[in-house]
Image 1 (cartoon, rainbow, N blue to C red):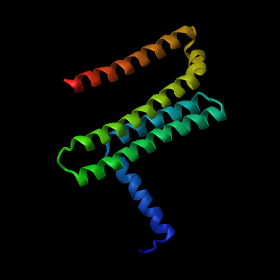
Image 2 (cartoon, rainbow, N blue to C red):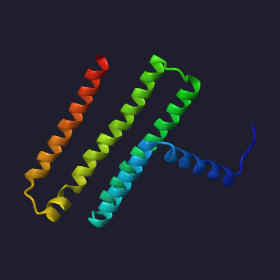
Image 3 (tube, one colour):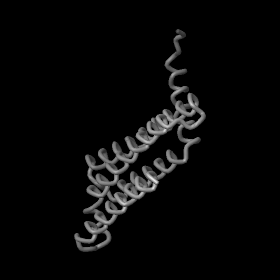
Image 4 (cartoon, rainbow, N blue to C red):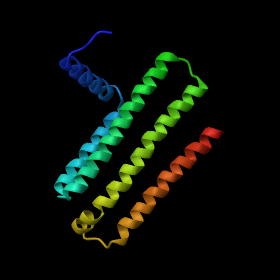
Length: 151
């Protein structure tokens, strides 16, 4: 086994991040949303601990999307033709990313709740209604996807 220098490892890691971002639409979407959320958190002057939490969930979603992308590439290289079991693995990976995204949305709503109420000058009940509608829509999408897949 050949040894690589720290510099070579850093270059390889940087190249990997670039490949993961440049070749995958979903990773680009996660990055864009994460960037918007972090800029919003900065502009809304949320507390330091809330900013740390928001940063962690944003990066978690991006890291899991990169991991999903990586495993999907391995699966596609191993089995270029559709394989039912490997398809299930890809679905589970996508579910992991979606779960992290749900977590990020819930945490984001909890953290941005008070600053947005102050800025928008709206009664506290409206964000709760919006939050309920978003969750209902997400559940509807999941159920609809499951139902359509069974057909």
